[in-house]
Image 1: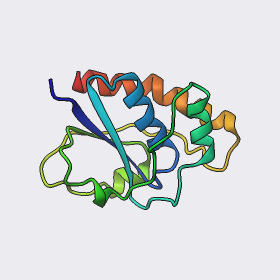
Image 2: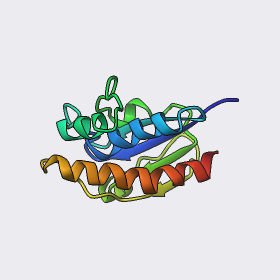
Image 3: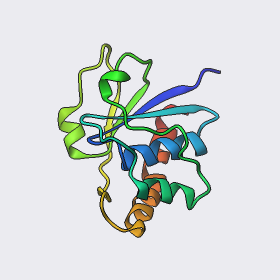
Amino acid sequence: MTKKNVLILCTGNSCRSQMAEALINHDLGEHVHAISAGISPQLKVAEGAIAALADLGISAQGLYPKDVDAVIDQPIDLVITVCDNAKESCPVFPRPIPTVHLPFHDPHGEPLASFIAVRDEIRARLLPEVAGRLL
């Protein structure tokens, strides 16, 4: 069985989309492969996102901000935008791809508790959406 690919798209690709990528690959990785990218990627993954993942025992190793142009030609089965800016700026892909908008609060610059709250909301809302569409 070939894994389905989901792209999590955000503005900076440093918080929400990175946590979503790691959570999907951890929880649904047997059937789904997640990648994340940004419209205007930051230089590094936010420390709060790394700490929120580590709190669950999920490694952030291999996570790094990517520009959407770097992944646009990959075989993607579903795109999920996690912020309004990414929804408005979502690029045109080489072929039609189903797109879902699930916005989440941006915890960038906030305490770890904010990252954990967003992480838990991503797990509760985004993962079932991915599973429902790709499994």
